[in-house]
Image (cartoon, rainbow, N blue to C red; front, top):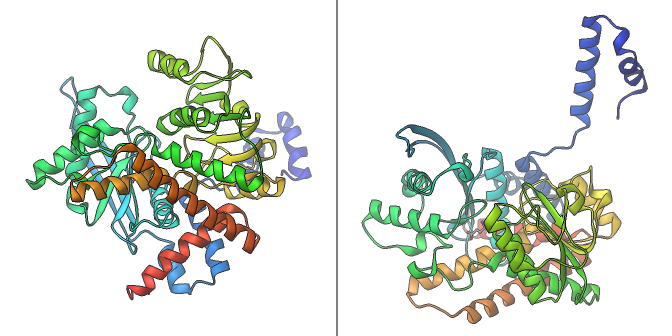
Length: 450
Ligand code: GLU
C-alpha cells in the first residue's frame, strides 16, 4: 500500500524536475518491493517448515538441519548442437535429505530454473516420500534450457551430458532421478543408458519413469494424476460431496494435467470444462473431450484455438467457479493477488508449489479444501518406488496391482493428513508437514545425526 504522501507525489510527477522525479520513482519502487509477496520457492519451503517446526516443537538443531539441503551439486557442461556449435549449459542436483532412504526426485529441463527452485523442489520431495511413507529421501535436479527449441538429437546429447555430470553422485542406493517438467520416459532411457556406459553394468533402478520396454513400471505414466484423483475421491467423501457430473478446471496440460483430464472423467465422472497450457486456456461449459483436446495439442503444440471451446487466459481459468481446480503446471500461480477470487470447492495441487503461504491462509479462511502438493502429487514418486522395487527383483507387476497398491498408499496418506488437520485445527498443508516432518525428524534421531 502506497502512503498518501507518496501517492500525492506520484500524482504531481509531471511537474517535478528530473532529479525529483527519479527520486520519487525510486521510492515507489522500493515501497512496491517491500509490499510484494515473497515468491522465492525456497524461502517459501523454509517458511512452511518453520511453521511446522514450531507446532512440533522441534529441537533447534533438528530445525536448522531440516531447513537446508544436505548436499548440492552445480554443473556446467558443453553440448554439441546439430549445426556444429557448442552450447554451454548449467545444471544442478540437490540431495535435500536422505535420512529415510536414498534421495529421490525428478529432473526438470526449464529455462527459468534456478538453484532455489531446485532446493525447494528437493525439500518438497523429502516431505512427499515421508507423507506417503516410502523408504526414500528427497532430491531434485534441473538444467537451465528450453527443450521446446531443441531437436531430438540435441536433447539426447543434453540428457547424456547431464548424466555424465551427476553419475558419480547417484545410484540405486544413493539418489534416484525421474521425470519432471519437460522431461519424459525417452529422456530417462537415454540417461539410464549413459549411466550404463559409464559404470559398465546394468542398473535399471538408477532412474525411474523409464519406458516399459526397458524396465519401466506399468502404471507409472498416469501415476501422478491417478494418485491425485484418489485424494480428490477421498476429499469428496470427507466433505460429503457427490462428484459425478460436477465440474473441474485444469491449469497445465503436461503429463499430470492430461491424465487428470482423462481420469477425472473416467474415474470420478466429472466434467472438465477448462484446461490450459503455457500459451493460454480453453473453456466449454458443456465439457471438453479429452481425446480431441489431446489430439489438438499434439497437432498444434497448444490447447488454444480448440474448435469446440472459447479461448480464455490462465488467470481466468484459475478463477472459474468449479468443484475441483487442478493447478498442474508450475509454482506460484495462486498468490495473494488472486486467492480471493478462487472459486473452487477443492484445490487439488498436482503441481509442486502452486500456492503461496499468503494464498494458503486466504483459501483456508474462505473454506476452500486444499489437497497440498506433496500429498496430492505423490502418486508419481510412489509408483517410481514400485518401479525400483520391480527393477531390483526383476519381476514385474501388472498395471492393476500397481493401481491397487498406489490407491492404498494415497488413501492412507490422505486420511493421515486430513485427521491431523482436524485434530490440530490447522490447514491441510500444515497438517501434511506435521506428518512428514515428524517422520523425517524421527529417522534423523534414530540415525544419531541430531
Ligand atoms: N517429479 C515427480 C515429483 O515431483 C516424480 C519424482 C519421482 O518419481 O522420483 O514428484
